[in-house]
Amino acid sequence: MKQIPLTCSGHTRPVVHLDFSGLTECGYFLISACKDGKPMLRMGDTGDWVGTFEGHKGAVWGVALNDSATLAASGAADFTGKIWNAVTGEEVHSLQHNHIVKTVAFSHDSQYLVTGSNEKLVRVFDLSSDGKALESYAGHAGAVKRALFCRNEKCVVSCADDKSMRLWDRSTGQEVSRVEFSSHPNGLELSKDGSILTVTYGNCTAFYDMETLTQLKEITIPTRVSSASLHPDKHIFVCGGEDFKMYKYDYITGNEIESFKGHFGPVHSVSFSPDGELYASGSEDGTLRLWQTTVGKTYGLWKCTEPTDLNNSTSNTATAAVAGVTPAPTNAAISCPPVAAAAPVPAATPNANREVTAN
Image (cartoon, rainbow, N blue to C red; front, side):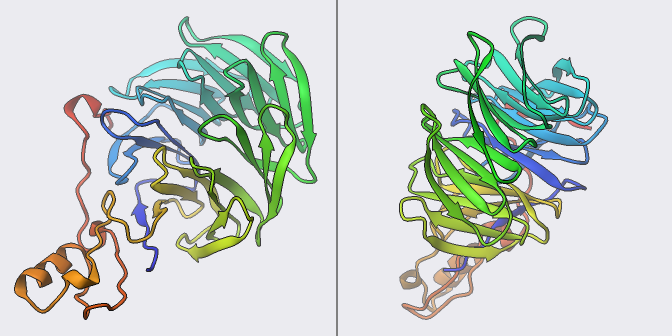
């Protein structure tokens, strides 16, 4: 079956980073960072717009949602990292830096935020107070691209333009381990269970054991790759980069499963949803796209009608039209585009308490 992604418009400049929340009683959510300076919040399974966080005065480079989707964070070229109430849309904290903030990430308990900036510093802020920087880690010789809490919040891992990934011990404030790369690392992701680090650099996607920082495997991609994401079950991973393509690989064997184009510009960020049913991509073309992990499965706005259910009856013809599929003969292969392909679905708010105010 043909992979037909959901396209999420709304941004006016390149989309450079994405982050999913955890699973909540309202489903899960997706936030996007864009050079237009306006992070957007969407329903994660459908891409429906929920709200836009307004307040930055420069390009937004990094975003994050906490697990419960009650808080959002963003880092921008206006030298600030901002914390937002993701339910009301109100700004909670503005964390001043001395240069562009490239990355933000929450701790699991949402009490702390780690940031990385062009100051070559990694900072940890306490959000239970007035947002003061409790910790600062210096040592990188280039702008910090990504930083994450790891090892049950006891450490922070970061990668930077100095072609290195470094592990910082929060109890001592010292660098405890370092990995050198042959080119600048672009992406850094921690697996859902916290055991594997996924790093992209040059044409490579590499995986590291989080406890020892030993390399588990390295796979060469046919393009310079910007971002990669490991499925929660750790059996496949997806990645994207300069050639506009999305790639899906078998994590165990390292073999390419499939690749396909959809974006009209380089892919900057990819991420699996918390349930692993889809993955999102953000691109230079200013759009986000949602892709099915299992093509043809009924999920979100994708609705697949089995070929055996299609015949020449009026009722079945109507069913096929709703699914956005042309009726096909029995046993014929059909593609299953999302419902939204036939007619745009209006933006939905998950519930009255989840709407984010926007101008």
